Image 1 (tube, rainbow, N blue to C red):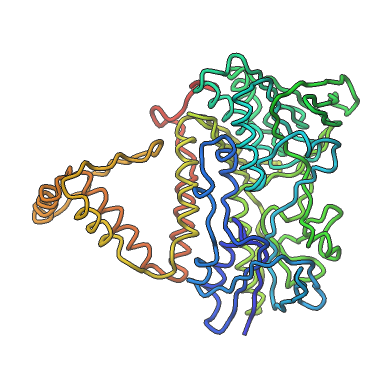
Image 2: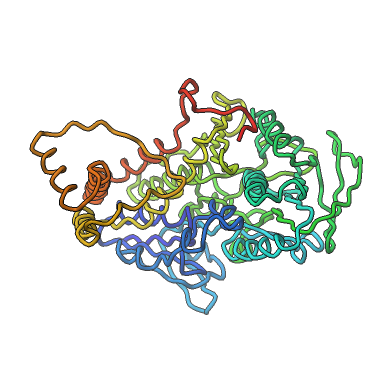
Length: 510
């Protein structure tokens, strides 16, 4: 019997556990451990903090979904990893032995590294932080003033910094307040759109978008300290020399600090670098303990390119799922005595919401020299990110076997609402119109159903088709199901053809 322990129940840990359970034998065990009892879709935090999502939209108890798949779950914090003994030491004094270990712990925000940062600014990195930020933003609306959105030196995953600045711009415009509220963006990047990668097309688009939105910015900026109502920043030149000090006034500020590994990893120095991130080889194995794997933002990543002010390397949901696929493959390969496969080269890919529009970035490979490097802007990106959020959450919630028929559920709902008006489609969701040929007998059946239930034929057909697709997907199992999920992810995130009519907007267009 093989026992695989997965530490972390987030966007890396849960998909890894699902895939392992699907592909391991019935006698093997998978156990997930987490310091919280819920799954949380982190990329939606900027929406939550801006008041565009509620907690229950992006977080839910994960235990029942793991149990449904036959995965053990311990909502208990890990204190440290005894890699030599292949054992997890738990904070409550207990322990758990493993044959293979997947570390998907997430990260910790190092607010304490800058004086006053934790006391006077807000964050959207973790769920609880995003909820507190939303409450603070609501208070700010009653007494508005200057806004500073910033990233400290050493910060990484910088795309959401821009995303949140644009979301606040859009939200304040909707409220008719934007013209009297200045917004300034502070970044350690040498130029906007560097994103920890450099050599990208993002610079010109983001400069134009920030100009259009009237968002000021400081680059090559090192945050020195934060006081009530004032952030002290030192600007640098391209050689890293100090050039100008700034004291930025603010009434509301959200900051991305530098990151470090969680406490359990920092207590396991034989696995980690000086920041507490897990050291891995090209197969995502720890070099000193090859039965220990890591995926997600807890992985140690060297900077992609040197910068005058330090910047961490990026990560995205897309690249993390690539890592998850490699980890699962390599654990099974190690168990079966087969050769591992490399996770490199990784692609960098983001979908960033900018209110009514959005920006999509693709760089392949993530490190120079690159074969593909582009950024496109348009409303389709905003819609694609909404769809990707729904896709990922549904992926986590989908049961391993077909339960109650979705078609039966639709029919019961039609019966219960007979004669009532059809519900409106969800706001902000894109609709695709399909020309589906059916036999004449089925057309008669559809028209009869619509007539009896007092509904439009198109809405009945759409609901039944959606339900039938859900039922079909639930019936697919094993490796084929993984292939379908991977194919759908690729379709959702696929770059839109450049010549598709109406697909793109000029930078900064509403």
